Image (cartoon, rainbow, N blue to C red):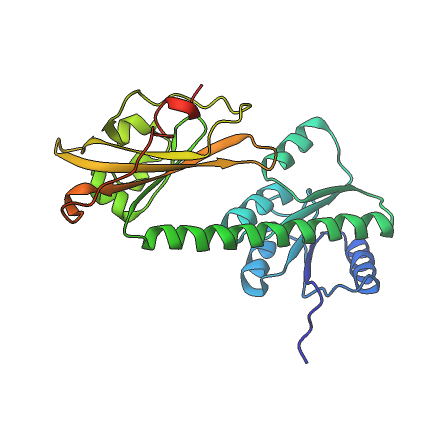
Length: 269
């Protein structure tokens, strides 16, 4: 029978404390696959065991302290870390904060405190995992679409381009990332793009036709459709733009486009 309890690696160089924490975790219903005393051993065990969480002391024996080990663990494996330490000086806290820990407990701590911090960290990691999974599904879907798809933030900086967008514009997604949309998507429409007034409640989208100039200077007749992305309170946080090459459209087919939602008009401030 598989053990479905959350697994937690303990990184602590004080043997008595490590044994006490291990016993506490057992009482709380977690499993501890290993206890290690150095940063390098922590990294090796995370790679081998892939625990769901790491309890990390900051001051460890050896050349690598807990902050350095936590940074490597986060970057290489994405495993969340909770710091357990007796040190709360500003310099230590600042170094620890950079590693984006999921919690920070000062020794000595109560069993209930440890339990709450662990449960909050596990819940946060599960929500993060679901979000990452949703983003992967969305990105895969957008990449597979035949239409050109470009997504921006509220300041018109490019956040995503699918392969069709790379082929049409001549820009790679990596080169375009972070650039202002008008640098990448050069389409002659009534007005140049401006940052959204993110506190306003503009229209949800629209369509328009224009001429796209590719990176190598080719001119392509296109239809552009856009949809705003909003927070739950209505705040605009970005836009998704679909561009269709009209030269591939069968003769006689017309578009019922209105004013563009992605270039000026009712969606810009």
